[in-house]
Length: 117
Image (cartoon, rainbow, N blue to C red; front, top):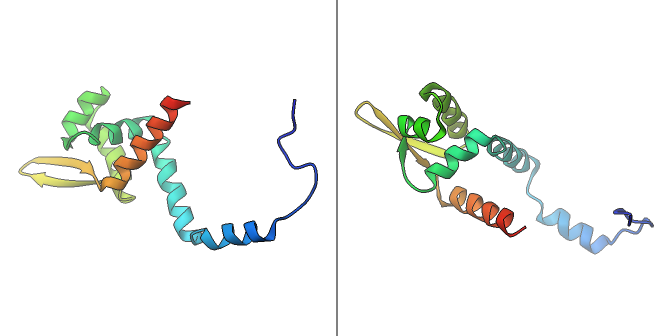
């Protein structure tokens, strides 16, 4: 089996500098890691996928996931704290949608990537 590490220690200073300059600050990367961690949960990922097609209420999402409304509400609360979803209230019903197009694009591109592998 071929080794997957360098067999010599050679550093390309130009590439290292380029990578360092293009890297976001630590706080931004930490928040990004938190978002990916949230999306790493299958239930939350299914919620985000469902919301990528249309706005849905908690009851709709509970039916789609075949779980309780309280379980869905808990997951939505976590997603909302990180700006992945947003909600609006219409009377007694809370409707949820993706916070913006970036979330939809991220999910679509990742699913496309997985399907191509």
